[in-house]
Amino acid sequence: MKLSIIVKDLPLKHTFTIAHQSRDVQDTLIVKLEEDGFFGLGESTTNPFYGVDIENMTECLEKFKPVVEKGDWESPEHLWELGKEIFKDNPFAQCALDLAAWDIFTKKKGKKLYEYLGLNPATIPTTNFTIGIDTMEKMVSKMKEVAWPIYKIKLGTANDLEIVRELRKHTDSIFRIDANCAWTAEQAIRNSEELAKLGVEFMEQPLGKDDLEGMKEVFRHSKLPVMADESCIVESDVKKCHGLFHGINVKLVKAGGITPGLRMIQEAKSLGMKTMVGCMTESSIGITAIAHIAPLLDYVDMDGAMLLSDDPARGVVITPEKVTFPEGPGIGAELLE
Image (cartoon, rainbow, N blue to C red; front, side, top):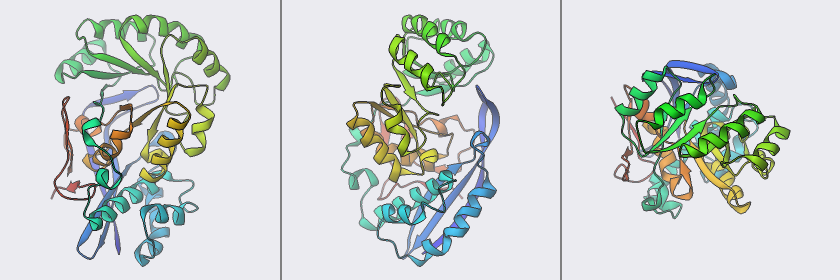
């Protein structure tokens, strides 16, 4: 078994702004595993909000490289358990390795990942398309540029309701809003009343991740369902979110990959919560991995590669009507030369 690390810059079509950061280029780390003529690819983007960069991801992977290359692991789940101590402070790096492990593992089995998991791709929910914070004119322009049945609108400004009112004038599509921790409980409850009238399906992470008392009030009084994102990073967070949120948005890069992500989804379902998986502006490598587990979900946010002006990989093709997977087994994404 050979482990290689590849670093790529992902240029965005438009400056992407959320409540706490803006970017024009997203850097990403790709793990490649090779053995017996098979290869597997996994990916994780960097994130300054979580203190994750190429250097510390690479450092973790290099420490664990001897274990990976020894090849003495039976499955991706086994490899994940072997690495959980080294990666406990850097699940982003573990995600890239975990995705690559699932890719090569299922390729050797001769099955697509969704087939190995016993899932039906025909049941994949339609992804939303994200509109980042910008001037009103540019947000309208971005929406018109990509006609889509569901838009996720990033909020966290002084004129959030005005933004949604203006966007609603230009489309009948479903809206989801994501405040990225920017509101107070009082704002979230008040805003939910107006947003419900404007065709918003749910609110994602309206309050700061640790504002549990505030979320109790929002959960009790909001006119819209609320989904956890920043409040639900790792497996132990799922139970904490029960009774505070109606559902969870699992980010594979934050959780540490598909292996813990599947467990989080199942636990949320057992608690009667809605499930969603979101992306972090990955290339088609990370997005294709999400698509394979999307049949498990109520909602999915896998538009990351659609936001890029130059995708270094090839994988799933996503339209409002369907998701078309690459031919052949595994996750199936490929790096372009």
